[in-house]
Image (cartoon, rainbow, N blue to C red; front, side, top):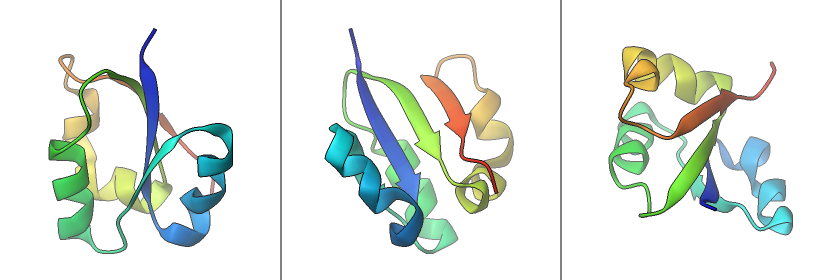
Length: 73
């Protein structure tokens, strides 16, 4: 079983740490891209904020990446 990570603005993802999610705070587009490229090994699910999803665009659909879920607005 793999781990879970979250990428996005601190206000939107910080609380997920309480559930054991690896939180990667990324406020700016470049930080989102770095977090996405540097996901820890073994992550099976990535939760992203809507802003992070907009930044990553087609990269979210890359079949070699972990399952990705976008938080609701």
